[in-house]
Length: 272
Image 1 (spheres, helix red, strand yellow):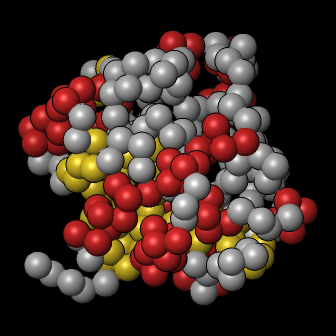
Image 2: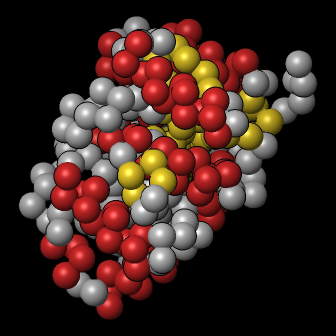
Image 3: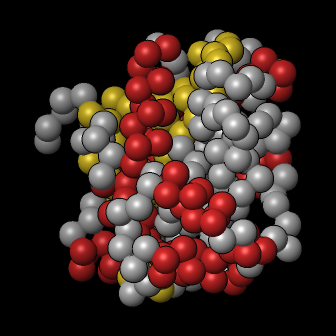
């Protein structure tokens, strides 16, 4: 197997989402949501590959079947220990850098993936993200979530993390313990965690963190279907084009305005 250093995006996906079961295969403009996510992620120029990571559970056979039909690499692992699922997938394909994406983000932006990877490299960081869950902050819309870490950092987390939430949410072992104010800025800022990981938060000015473009509920799904319809059900639009769409059609944001935002580590979407 080729063991050259690689940057691999791993998309976690499973059928058992609590608020919208089976959502990863629901239709958005003529394609399953997972297909929309994979195809958009594949356009990121910094990536050497994209892998779907699902579970070994029988209920996730449809995810594996879709991957086989579409020719998407697929790795299957633990239901609850998502950190192990990521680690095994990354190790099997010789990843040097790991990009974490969730399958309920059909507006995920390849340019933002590239930016986050570039910032990790520029800063010599162990972990970089374009948002962190409360009490930290975010300035990009919910649903553009990108996390990147070195394989060495992921392996250390895999070896050392011993709390269930650290295994279930994949990355908190790398950044927890950093004071929220240390990463609160209009600039991209770096801080060192108590465990010695160098962490970078990619920020945006102005702040668009209140916009919700993820799919957790039926109203969210309706919104993203409307977004795709505005772009003739093509998936090549950028996040800034969606932003311009929301500015020209303020009513779109009202479609899922009543959906409560998750708080704390709930925002990490462990149900994927």
